[in-house]
Length: 512
Image 1: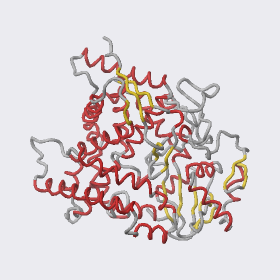
Image 2: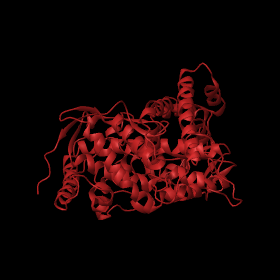
Image 3: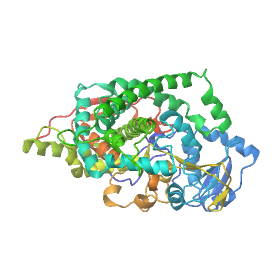
Image 4: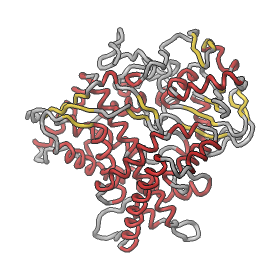
């Protein structure tokens, strides 16, 4: 972690590298004036004159030079962000374009940019893992039908009902720790969030399947580079039966599919009873869904939603929690404030005769934990890039975009842009309490995407992360080893590079 910046607010630390605690040496410092020089593919341009100079397709040599972007894609997108508008960044033979202008980003994600497909090649590759009928990968009327089917599970009152279970499972995890233990924090968060997703959304204990889910996620992280290769080469790599990565992925998928199929069959045999039983969960809603003609979802559609929400319901949230603990470990004042906020509620619980633990309804009384969550998602959005694909030749912000172009935007880059954020590289949760964030909340903040394809589980994550943080930090101090030097591992999600280890120390019980 960089040294505190001069004049930084309490709890805020300036990041020397654009990529913060996880930057890596190739990412450039973007705390610059509008006239500052930035470089992409070896060509320097000022922020005010960038975009039009890069509106044409790069020449052959620059296309080859741009292959270096694959080594540090967050850094490359950050430097494109400094241009302020849309730009070409063709990589080898693969046409790529980028926009970081908030108005254009919103039009892209809303489906209002002419010539852009609703999904694209990136999602075709993702469908190889989570299924072609997944809410993430399908489009058009099928997407709208599936979104209607899952929406009841994420209504405000339904998500609020999950809160007690989130606190209970976080407490159960921490209860296994002993004072002074060294824990693999990233693994703990992955196991916890999978447990919460499985129990709350599907009513099952999935601890025995964690290794298969971890194998699929880790293998997917290792072959992330395929997503930015030319389509023919990528397809050949996916089809290669001798690839160890493909073999590991197929074996783990087979086991997960078997588990999910059995779960669906058992629930079909014993459907949810509206009277006298537990509240319905996502699987119950999926099985009860009917389209306009009264037809149920197919087995494939139900299966793909279960797999999608088990993955999406835990991987992104696990990364958000891990980054939050990393940031709090390097900002002791922010951690102390969160712990005190939680412990004040624990003390109140004891005085009211409640159990010595938080409850889901305490979320409203955790403004600092919620602010820490928002600031973590600003600096380290797990879904750090989003993409569409040009279906026809078109033009965006004066930038010609040919059919087949991969069109990227990046919450990671936009949410750290000094054009839209005061002190963009400082970790300062208080900005979310004072609303002194400039264009941030409404224009340049989209960790869950935007528009009709935004993450339907955003309210679930925004409930889970602060409740878990408050539950754990109310009872434990978390000291992350090497927190100031951890680097990012940008895959499909934004992960820390390597495992994240922490020393846990039990706090004294809250006073009366």
